[in-house]
Length: 191
Image (cartoon, rainbow, N blue to C red; front, side, top):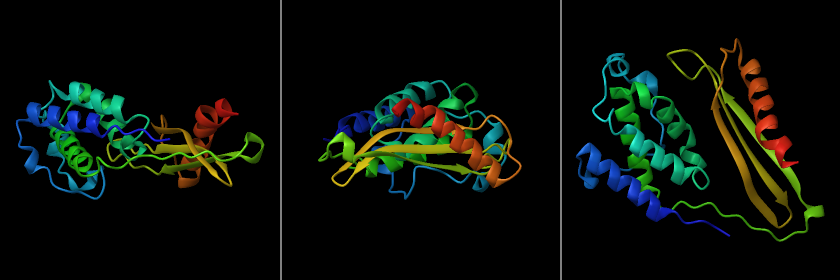
């Protein structure tokens, strides 16, 4: 079983190009949907972005279309969604990189396969934290993904990407907070 939303991704790209008044040919291949904030000047976080009035239209469409099939974009989309009301030049740059990534990865799909009985499968949870990754407030981000795994089964059940609410004092503390969130949000409900 697989879901192909490449048509929806193309709609997001078309909407972005229309609202940003850019040629789709100007979008170039990039390796990841994320941008390293340390490479952006401070002024990019202070000045309003060009797309501040249209940002919610684009970001919410991407969030809706990618929430199930494109967990590779979730961190960037969540960051943009959190900043829709305080849109800056940095947001414009992050959105552009995401659109470049989506344009050249439209054929990425998520496959699931089931070939075992339930008794032969188990839930597997992976979680991680990026320690103090937000350069503005030093908060970490939790990431987690849960699968149903068996000898002939691999099904993505859910994932979480969430900015932590407190500043961790060590990577170990950030990891424990990530584990707690992933267990509460993904693992326990799946059980």
